[in-house]
Length: 263
Image (spheres, helix red, strand yellow):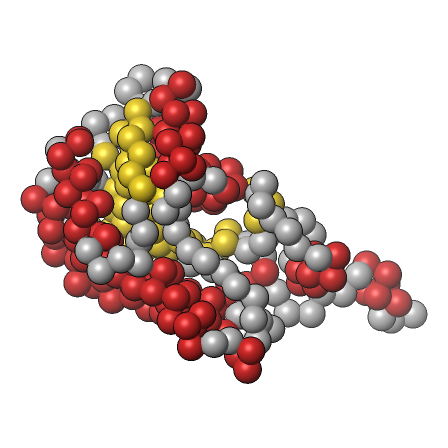
């Protein structure tokens, strides 16, 4: 059976580790040829080498997504390497945890530049190339922090909220070119670089009905669906992969519920 993404070219930003690497590895297993974009060239090479060793096809590209010409350069590289691009996953991001009053202008602008402007630059560069190939798929990796207020998420949450709105606007504008644009809002995800304090973990678990962190594989599976041929009538959607966090209000324990039962 032919892999579902056979002959497709995918570019994933921030694909050197964590969620981005899991996404790249999944798309490679599904048959796509990958461009691995990372600001750290060594990390990009390691991720690409692992995919190639596993039988996939991947090429590293060291670039800062926040650079003025980063999108144009990355898409030109994809075109010269594989002939074009069909799938773009904007995953690269930075997430300082700082109160608004403690955030410097430099920090604020850097977060928005990487997370939001980087997404804008890559989408703007990719869409015309996708259109020439008959269409494409864009998936933006946002966050639950872009949907609700939270301590220390001023710059990060704002950048992700902007990404969600940009997703909706591009979905409308790119639809005539057969380009679907969707977003994923992950909840807390366990990665090799997750470093949450005991208090942070407890706060999350208290608000997640599934009572656990997610995995990078869960995010990769969601991306795989959104870029698959089967997902052909979905655009402008934010898919929460968050264990039920976004749907949750008060969570009562079974003991609390039994105590409130009428005699």
